[in-house]
Amino acid sequence: MESSGQSPGQSPVESQNTSRRESTTAGEATNDTQRASDYVALSVETLGVRLGDIPAVSERVGGDPANWRIREVGDGNLNLVFIVEGTQGAVVVKQALPYVRMVGESWRLPLYRAHYEYYALVRQARYAPGVAPEVFYFDKPQALIVMEYLYPHVILRRKLIKGERVAELGETLGRFCAQTAFRGSELSLPSPEKKADVGLFSGNVAIPAITESLVFTDPYYDAEMNHHTPELSAVVARLRGNVALKAKAQRMLMKFTANTETMLHGDLHSGSIMATDASVRIIDPEFSQYGPMAFDLGMAVANFLMAYFSQPAHRSADELAAYQRWILEVIAACLDSFDAEFQRLWQTERRGILFPQTLFEDQQHASDVACQALLDEIREDALAYCGIEMHRRVLSLAHNADFEEIIDTGLRARLETRNLLMGEALIVNAAAYTKTTALVALAETHNAGTCWH
Image 1 (tube, one colour):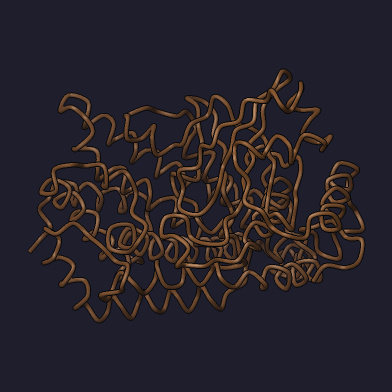
Image 2: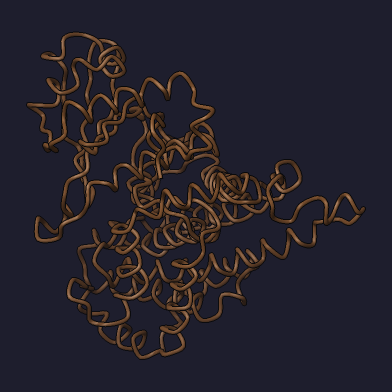
């Protein structure tokens, strides 16, 4: 889908308005195609040699590349991640591996996922400025991205496990989800640009396939790579025996596969968010694709709910209630900020083919009712996606540390059960909990541990 001479990650429409910085980066990537057609996984020993003569990198890091301090810090499921430090500063280098790192070479995975991560980062920088890390350099054949080093930010999941607070956390995430959902859709984008972008991202086949199986299907049968806490056997049997639940999960999968409303982050969990006590940044959009507006919002809320339910294993009794209450406040702020920002953009940036002013304001008709109806639909679908994510993180392949680091499996299973049962309620009857107060009340009820029967 890329035209000749076009910057990587740009649709044909975007290529007409390329900034000087993006042109330089694209030129470097093109030269790399000519001189380095064979992929080589980098290491601490080889990274300085590889990047030392790239001005976009060397000028930011500074000093002799032979003296750069390079650390491999990747602890994720898929990629190599390095921090490179010199006399002037530091950058992060991320390189895709041709397989799933957490499984090994038996699960092959195409390197092009790094291309789509780069494409997504470029778009997120435009849709939600200042939230995604800035990209300094992209090497397409090497599946390598050099980007802003976010310091002193740390992974949000670690802060939640430690009981630390982040100012404006929910508000920032809600605005990010609203801005990327609205500005990546035909509510805002010119239709030719959006359709070209859908075509570009349609080449990302392997990564969405992981989501389609691990998230929507594998939790509900005995898939090969599934695993769960042994004491959960009874509740797992209950969920897999709930035909209405499985049918709804598959219905949400249909929406996920067929709906290209907007560009998604695709994997917006608390491990894809970095934070200080007062700053929030969002990373790792390699699962990006075009999909439903509700998906990212649902993923984010699910991960806060899992953090909420796991807290009795991480907090002392005198800290527990206040910290759990704060997490619920974050969830409420995330949902309410999404609505507020979406409504603001509806009034100020609705220039696409959807809900045009010619049908509403130009005829002296208010469009508020139409906006609210769309938001209600997004909220309901987001809660269903939320429940599915709450299930897959406990029953499928890739679990999260909130529960997984609880050594006492009996305690872990009790807390995971609360999470699983709330997820069931959200999937089967999301419409009942679209009011923020109802969602919070549902979480508090399940947190009390009285819902298993």
